[in-house]
Length: 296
Image (cartoon, rainbow, N blue to C red; front, side, top):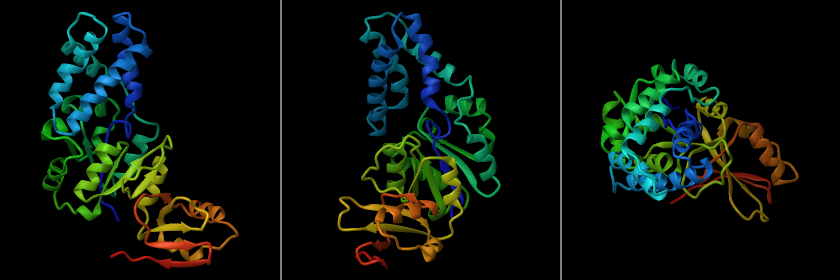
């Protein structure tokens, strides 16, 4: 079904929070700032800058020259913010911060899929981090915002993917990432299928997403489906839509039960995953009917 797998890096393959913790601990200690206080201020500054970059208002270079300068100013400290940013990025690049199972996942997928990186960040830093984690060799192409000149979620970022991947077929590509604002929104704008990596079980958004996974195992499972179908559970007491996506052939063995909760458990047992896209099929527990839905 999908051939091109477009992987985000941070918090999808590499544990950014863990790497950031190690790097910032050293910097904060040097300046006598507690980790909790320093982190809160740094994250507020960094998040604001990255969001501005995603909107196209500032460049990545502006982030690199600004975030630690602003952090020093917030604590009325003297220092070289640009040098601190270089120290921070160098620290991120020296250790293996991959998620458990990431390398094994890529090793299993590489023989049958074309794997590419799609990431917002600094080109040299991201490449070094992938190399430090022994993941880099699994990817045939690396699309990095600092080198493309535009960030996810902008369509221009994904146009670079379309143009540079030989014989690229958009309908056979899947974007896999943890960020709703850059990865999932970027896939939506580019007209690509999306897979939200959500291991912490965050609430489902209103943004249309094809697949929501909590683990790498679930990614491998969905890649085996030949004809996925989106199913909505219908019952008069349900206050919100419950839509799942899974293999169409599994519905042939669906057994009606006394409650929609039991039906939901049955779908999950079949390997169905959450989705926020509109259903193509309905399981109506008021009438015990299974029917398809058409939209104008």
